Image (cartoon, rainbow, N blue to C red; front, side, top):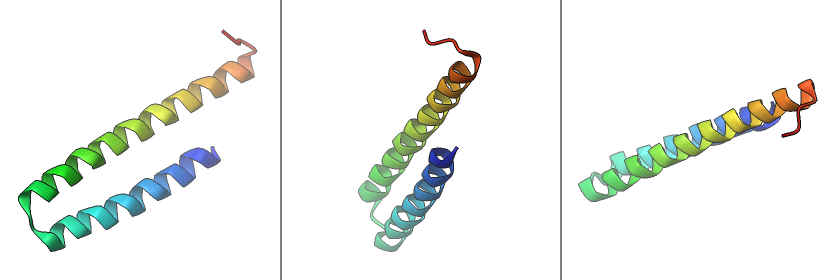
Length: 65
């Protein structure tokens, strides 16, 4: 559970920083790169959370496949 909370905080801080940076630079290619990186970051975070929750359920049920 701690990984989920710290991950959410770090994702939020990173996205606020790079989106603010993209807004201040106002260059379209940089903004496109930032949006793609933020999408990949969110995808990876949600996949990690899902895997973490599934492994937690398996540990509780005693199933170690």
